[in-house]
Image (cartoon, rainbow, N blue to C red; front, side, top):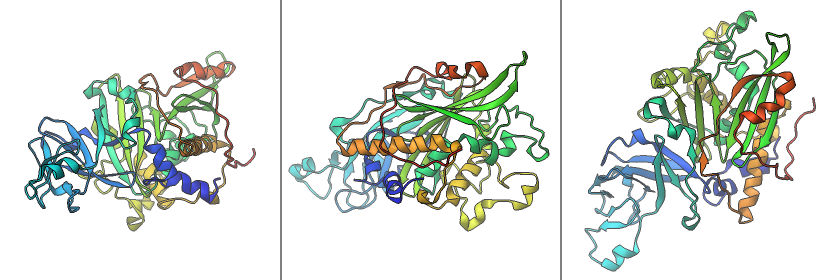
Length: 437
């Protein structure tokens, strides 16, 4: 478990906070490209790391990300006019380029004033179906990191954004908790769970499909230059020669809150980007070697039910106010009374409250990757407070998430299945209690 002080340190992400400073070292996804569909389309109001922003696409098709409020008198630019390669405030007509420079001041003719004032603008990059921003210090802007999904043809990639009303860490930790897959997601992970007759899910596009039934996997972890890889070993019975084997499922963690989840035919890259302390932008990008059916992905996630989510605002609407739309009458045959991976993952995270007090929990061996995630993030907050820089490699396109069988005698070979990003684990003075056994 964490102390309350450690928990606060990890969960608070606003300006000036230790974890907020960590996030501001990296390029972060802001919105999907599809949310700004064409030049001079409507501006989009977004929130990132406790700041209210607007994203807009100018007449040339380039995206800008500015502070939401006009620097004149504070009116929102989200209701402004997007025109002539800029965005114009409705209040007094001040117009700004995507770099924040003033283009027009109808109620002020002073050139000196026009040159002195600038809207707060952030560096922007658009790639892989996402708009990215760097919110750190301008003179320390890192190189942009490329991920594997960026090399996939557009038809082989699906991009989805979900806004969930809880802290980013609750959602991130779920991605490094392999034991929950076969339990929370029983309906797709362990078909036949009701009769204790396991048969693998044959849906090759479902990341919840487990190859074997073992809800107490053994975990191994190695640090990398991007974060860490962890491997979950599930007992896979005997192979054709009678030798013991394991199913090995590897999940990488990429700073500050990214993971890749495997399915038999695709990879799910997930970014948990904090809007603020109690709201998170989840970006899920699915890609593979074959065309990806976006509507199928939405169905797998359970987002095809309009009660839960819509493309219009990307808001996940299940909450305690509507009891998460849980159908308890279905629980005689459906494990959760919910349907779909995101329905279940988001509902569990939301059920903990906006920010869970981790001083009240009791970790076990199955939580080792979660504990390692916390150690690395706490170590990162220490580093930024000492003035150190945090970086990611410029090229992470080779990072994947293998899900394979290995003979028991070759289980150490899992390192060979992951790209060569290994490094020696850094020393840590962070203590996180895990129950023995």
